[in-house]
Amino acid sequence: MSLIVQKYGGSSVANAERLMNVAGRIKAAKEAGNDIVVVVSAQGDTTDHLMDMAMEINSNPSKRELDMLLSTGEQISIALLAMAIEALGLPVISLTGQQVGIKTSNLHTNARIEAIDGSRIRKELDGGKIVIVAGFQGMDDNDDITTLGRGGSDTTAVALAAALNADMCEIYTDVDGVYTADPRLVPEARKLADISYDEMLEMASLGAKVLHNRSVELAKNFNVPLVVKCSFNSNDGTYVREESIVEKMVIKGVAHDVDIARIAVIGVADKPGMAHKLFKALADQGINVDIILQSIGRGGTKDISFTVSKSNLKQAVDIIKGLLDELGATDVKYAEDIAKISVVGAGMANNPGIASLMFEALAEEGINIEMISTSEIKISCLIPKEDIERAVKAVHKKFRLDSVA
Image (cartoon, rainbow, N blue to C red; front, side, top):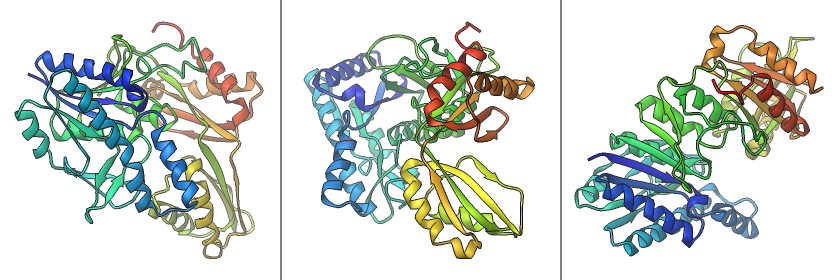
């Protein structure tokens, strides 16, 4: 008997028909002799709808109350899915994040999982039940409900798989697996049979929407066997594992992200500690920073530019405005009409010329590069948002990712 953790996204449980389809999949896995724990997201656009309701009442609600509201979406999903499984004649129980002992930090709307008490789940499994768990939520040390931020249900599923020492964590979504690029932009993109943890972590961090980067990081840290499948068919998925063993590709994929903004802090005092003061203030408020560029000093000052998600832009700008005097800076500017394109692949570390090929592809399309960031397995460029579709297609073609490895 194997212990399998399955996660179903919002599109997979969006209506009654899809809920019954998911229930059928769970029944088949249970009747094959497995113990099953299922993590579920809120149905369809429920979370967005709840957020709209909040904004109608208060344009600046406290994050604690937002968590109280947004967490209800997953509770609806788990109850409905449990009812669907009951209708198929199987024993089942639905549990919230708090009921299964998911302890988190107290950073509301973007909490981190700190510990999981798996005793309640094990008790229910030992009683022969399928366990349905609300994703995206937990409880802090004040017994307040918290939510885990974007992609939180993926993180819940992988964290539970690690805590329970599951044999497999299956992430079900509306696509067949991980592709070399977004197939909606690049019809020639092809599905990968497998991808390494490191490559998937970069792809997720750089804009690929199939898995959230925090879930991949957890899977890597705890060596959780992970597979991405489609909930609407029986096709083979993409396995995420320690080492990519099937396809020896220099570049595994092209990722893009349009949900970013660039911030420039102008005239920062050119002396030690200024960068630390700036980025610590952002980190203390849970704001992640991506590409960073510091100009060469002039007249005793430097400019510091970096990117954040659009959802964090206003808060970040407000924080920086309050720091201008301490930084010796003169102004803060920002832009939202940008996008990021990246190539990812563990093979690039031993293959010179990857950056040259990427830049060539963009140059041939007449696309200007505004910022560049690199690591051993990725190269990212900031470009005008209006050029992103052409850029993704051009780079994907330049690296011949539509060909079989």
